[in-house]
Image 1 (tube, rainbow, N blue to C red):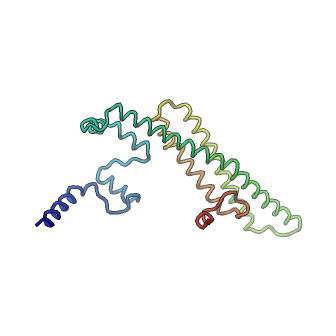
Image 2 (cartoon, rainbow, N blue to C red):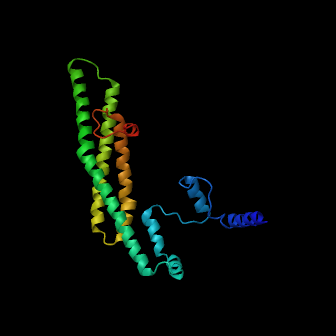
Image 3 (tube, rainbow, N blue to C red):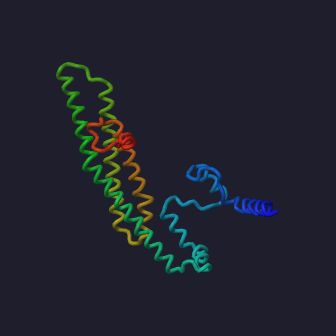
Length: 212
């Protein structure tokens, strides 16, 4: 019967595609371990994935099936590379602007108010509370970490300006600059959890979740 034939065909396809199917979470570390076990190439980021276009066997595949010529692949790579660079440049510029014009001034102001309060307690002969001291220290540590990350970011941007090809620039953004953006993000996230709502200049996550 026809239904049996269809099931036989489905079963055949299931067996044939077994090496490339994964029934779990494709974004998890479990998939990465499984993919390595199966011998797959796992790109770390977009530029790594784009480099696959330049592999000889992939270029031959595109040309053999008359999908894209080598020149068309080159053009597509340049377009995707330029788009990646533009997006990363916008993200980096906005992050720096927010940190320099909003986050750092706010952190400095709040830190100064805590220190001023601590000094007033001493003048009045009151003991400085351990909580206030530890809070000031924690904010200061995060603040210094944030500044160091920004300094490293500026150095990597200077290196970026010296690079010539689109491929070099995309990899520099992915391998050197993007990790620093995440590093800065981590410090800012911690500071967001320490500063009062009326001091923080941006909507907090919980506020955005319940905004009307």
